[in-house]
Image (spheres, rainbow, N blue to C red):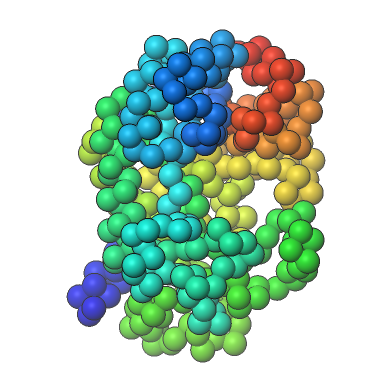
Length: 357
């Protein structure tokens, strides 16, 4: 345990600075038109080919697919016939019902009340989070991503839920759970794994569990940010070594992301970041999409592309057109829609008409 603690502490202390990418794939100078989808849209090869042909005809260039390794590998092969890039969409730190992880309760995240995510589920039943401070959890997550990265022809390994539990929900989501989050409540404030607390105390001489107002400690915030950053950058090294790109679905813009979910994505070694610019979650207008895209583009300093995630249930076809224009004017190199099941024929017409350069 002591050696593991020293290793994690050392890596997290250093990784507030990003490391350069050596295996980054060549840039694609086109406007990505993508969608997120699960594997439930098709079962047989014939069904998949029908869907892929339709997606291609409607202007889709990329598909972020949540599926098992074998099915993903099959879809990658079929999608090549329709010029669609497949990205393996994988939940990272949130691993509900994971049959391997549940054998290791010590891998799970801990909140300020001392509740372990193995047993206590914040907000919803599918929130069951691993800790980025656990060496076992980190190794397991990395090996999972390597398995996907080994798929021939895959465009990227796409990380999702690579953060902590939302310490603050979006304004439009709080009433759904009968909440008014006017401060950081301990049951939603995560990162207090025993390894995290011990490592922080070795550096700063204090146990963060003893802080009266932990939200005021910039050191404690940065320490937790670094844990996720170091995990992502370790995954990036493995994925890039296999000739694949690394992408991630992230919160809207860096400052918001750091505050709400302890996610410092602007410093990650990514190839593509997909901030989920779901304006309705935050009771914002469409101009906010441009504002959010601009922040991510500026803070990432051109090290990776920013592709705007758009929430279709909150957008009419006309609003989708406007949202795409706002994202593009904010510097986004493409858009990805969620979810594909909410797309109407008129929505598809908007995507089909988009210029690809």
